[in-house]
Length: 343
Length: 220
Image (cartoon, rainbow over all chains, first blue to last red; front, side, top):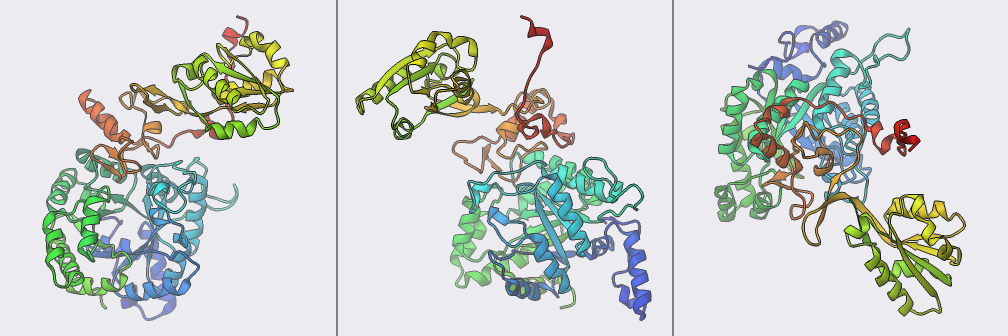
């Protein structure tokens, strides 16, 4: 079992005290014991099978859309990824969206990519995110801008994702900025560091395959507390990758959340198979989608099957459901996969 | 070498609007080798401009290197008699023309593309971004800063498939696949387990335009 904390924390503080003051004191002491005060961290540390989902912010200043999506997911997942200009298309910022979601009681995992911001901007944004109550960050390289709606933009890539993970870890554990300065406002002021639960991405399907576990190991050594994988369809290849992950003991140092994306149509299955680098879709799934009388229902059924299989794999600590513009299906998937977290 | 390509003739002609006597000036070094701005290309552009008429007088010449002030004596008289200079050098050469002839308008005939290699007839590719802190020794002689579309330092992103980069699979190889394969062949794959620290970008243009001063050769 993965152990990210000094000690396993109680799953629900409110079970142990009726007094708001006492509850708050317990919460504070637990926050000190854990790395971040993240509920996702607590769940994983206690050995629970975590469920995360994805919430893509809108391409307009539309708070209702964010709140509607969050309401769909709120009671069904432990935390939700908020994407950061995904596929290089401008959207509401991950931190702004994360604040709205957090205020509704749904725990956000803020994605941060290296494409749009340098080390100054990222550190400043993480300080701000922490102050607004955000406790999870997912450190990503970022899709290249040629795929998005501003292909003539200049990229940044001051850091890569491994270096970003190490920077956030150093901010939390060594209490220093990337330049080495302590995180304090002046020599006399106290150190006030942002304490974030740090995630990364892992792609078992990208090339070169034999380097993929090494790359995960680098992320773990840099400080990743959890990783979410690229969406998995090719179970055989994922199995092989997990064997390598277990052989290196990485699953004991870092929670591996297996990524799944329900297929909506045979067209989507073919697109994922043929067009998306780093994703492989076995022909058996394409065939099932092609032959199904109700492809959407078949896509959900396949996803539920996958989650059940993934859950049985040693070292898989949770599942990350990326229902792309199909958030309303997440509760059904969670329920049918037997992962209901309370409903 | 520095690799460049000619601008569209319409853009060049646009610059020369209103000028009566123009010196078309080629460069005998990199852009000669990459067939963009040498003697032959200078003659071609001069001919096209003459054919376009407008009563404009076109002079032409090619010097050994436009990036070095000492080679301009040979064209000083021609330049003095012109009201504009069209440079077929790289951006560095064209700027030197402007410095040597401060009173003359200078226009570029080329787009400077990159520092790279010749990969066969009519093929060139970018290999060096002049980052000022060469790590080729660590990465098996293949530069991640240049050959990876995102200049990643710790291995390939998820966009590497079948040895190609998702940014443009037809034209771009995954630099990290190349690094991986080469280090494997050299028996040095362990080097990729090390976490590469954030780069010091101040050694690049991020630190401002760079200069190099060497006392040891200053008196030569």
